Amino acid sequence: MKNLFSRKLLCLVSALTLIGLMVPCTASAEDKEEDIHAVILLTSDLHANTWGYSYEDNTETTNNGMPRVYTYIQEVRKENPIVFLVDAGDAIQGTIMTDDIANKKPDQEHPVMAAMNKMGYDSMTLGNHEFNWGIDSMLKILGQAEFPVLGENVLDEDGNCITGEGWTIVDRGGVRLAIIGVCTPDVPIWDGEKEGIDDTTFEAANEAVKKAIKEIGDQADIILVSAHMGQYAEFDEYFGSDSGEKIVEDNPEVDILQVAHMHITVDDKVNGTPVVGVRNSGREVARVDVTLDPDKNIKNISTEIVDMENYEPSEEIRKIPIVKELHEQTLNFVQGIDENGEKGEPIGITTAAFQPENEIRGLPEGKLQDTAVIDLILKVELLNSDADVASCALFKDTSDLPKGDINYGNIFDLYKFDNTLYTLDVTGRELKNYMEWSAECYNQWQPGDINISFDPEYPGFLYDMFAGVDYEIDLSKPKGERIVNVMFKGKPLQDDQVLKLAVSNYRYSSTLKAQKLVKENHDWESSNSIRDMIVEYFGENSPVAPAVDHNWRIVGVDLSEDDPRRAEIIGYINDGLLPTPYDKSYNLADYDTLAAQAEANRKDGKTVQEQEGH
Image (cartoon, rainbow, N blue to C red; front, side, top):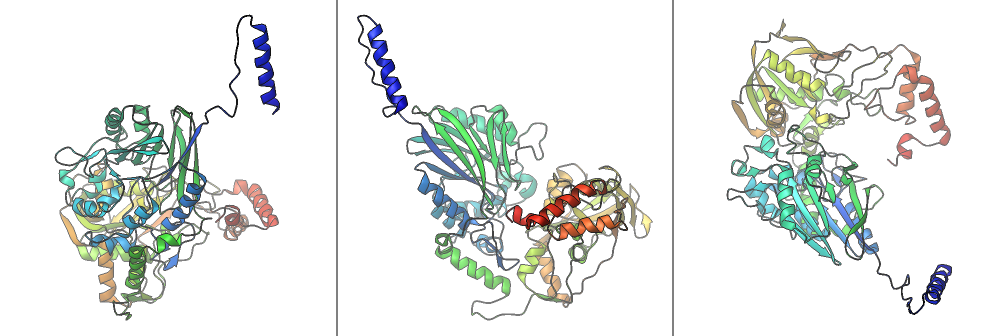
């Protein structure tokens, strides 16, 4: 009221001082048009998590899943009249429910599409995993969407967007949001031999966005690029055709960039443009709040990454008939229960657990030493390929085979992807270069370190281990110089020696060929997946006992195991009083600081996990 009175008094004084003029005072706070507030909610890499369930573990998850995402979406929609919902791809792949049941019947109703329709998505962008079952199956499944599926840079033989649309404009509450969807152009690297990929063109994302912006012109108030790729180039570092950052640099008209694909949290800016990305499986939602003036000019954009841990799953999603039906069918499939409700024989039997206990909480022994888990996969690969050498990764740090009956969920936990097996000829030098690439996942050991740690720039699925050769990894040395003492059949491996390598189709395409580590092309591909090979092995060889040949080991480190301070620090970690040193090793030089931090946490009465909300 005080401000309103002051403004009216000022108007009166002005009127009295201006001779011969009548100056009406009509402006007031009540009469002024208000700013407009819009909210854009962004998801990606949902990976078919329609329930919030880990079928391989036979447990409900506590912090992810589309039902939790929908609970949050509903909350935001109740508070805001203008809310947009956009997904950046990798939606229909990733669980036993889709990979082993739904996606093999593309003509039938799909649970992910049903859930996304219910959630009210405004658009979805193609992700690379949408192509895993070939173009025809992909289009049948995505054709069930009641919203546009965008792929501005993915073109058919006639040069048209393969899904029919590359961009769309959504008008809500008078705010026009243009959404441009682009997929990583690296799809042929991973799925180049799948049906229809040869006839599909994947253009550079930055150029495709430029074309779309020109077509959009002045039709939109906000331009969002929903890109299924990382912020930085994955393969094309020189030209940036697969780089979210390059999209913004070449297209300053972009107001907001959504990145995906890498399964990491992103909340950044490139040349002032907000860039957001979320973790996979519905763990996070990116919220973008946009303030526009009455003329629809953007005044402010703020971003937030919202964790889904504190949200309860929505029963509205779980009660969708096809979601509920496929969930129950998957539970039965994993447990070996047939259509009549009868439990069949287990896939196999083990005599003991296959993974050793971790010395340090959260640091997987499966990547620090040779284990029965990896040796089993590699043995199966060698048996099915008749190769000299084989490689594979531990996709999940906690993957294990428990003692007793083994079901399909256990096998999926061990090997979650539908990779097939390739063989090709490699020289000794090429194999060593491949092994060096793999060993880059470790951080270099420093004197006083109490543990081995991992470079955060290298996701765990990029670390391969090998069978058929004996070798050592010297972590006292820098990247590129770590593989030493490589032996084949008891003799040093020669650089010009030719071996037959068994490797997954994914690793062959995305690494060996993409990074030019090998010269020869693959000469054989398995007719079944590596996961199916493991199932067959258990069927033919149960009971299976864990076996380790210890053909590799880490050297060049002195972990001060005799120093009592090391045991004390490890005790703090295992008690939850210190964070797990996964990305960076703890060092004895910091003992006093670490001990004080742990004791302070003990005094507060909360573990690190509780403080972080886990």
